[in-house]
Length: 199
Image (cartoon, rainbow, N blue to C red; front, side, top):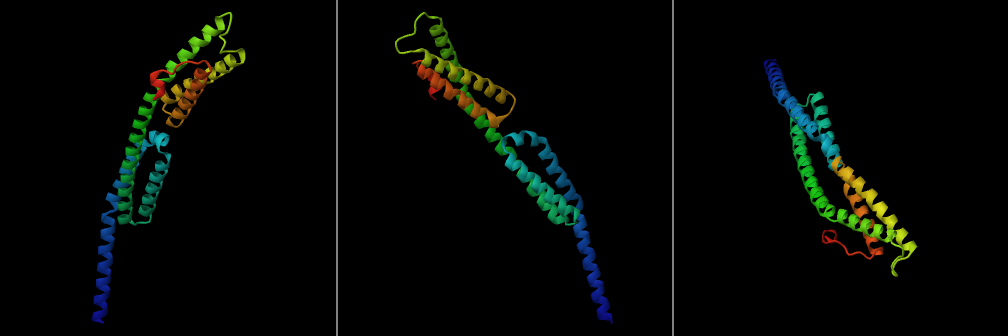
């Protein structure tokens, strides 16, 4: 009887110690989850533009930590919250890299396209104001060059808006499309590419 009482007492003691250990991580777990959420919310909007896949991963990690916390698994919730914080750091690092690459690519392409558009417009104005077209140019060719110029101008305006508006997913496709049409117009008009446009 004494042995049974002792075992029961030991079991109760172990249970109390276990519950105490678990509850001791309740506040740290809650704090870690809040820290992960705060860090995530501070950069979420920008991250959605550059790394939406990683945003989803962080959201899932925070949700999982909260679910463990609500079940009373505070140790697990603490570890998961810490992992979520690391994911936020990785996400922010990826955003920084994407922003740097975008700025570099924009600098390269924006150095050539405006010059190309200016050269095309000048040539088109000269040809349309003249009484005769050069032997290498006919009306159909001129109209085709003008069409490519108009498309290039439109695409370039949209690319600039996307860049200033912080829409990275749209910037380079629009800028590249503008450059492609500008190149076609220059070829039709037999214009030499500016140095910046050949990069």
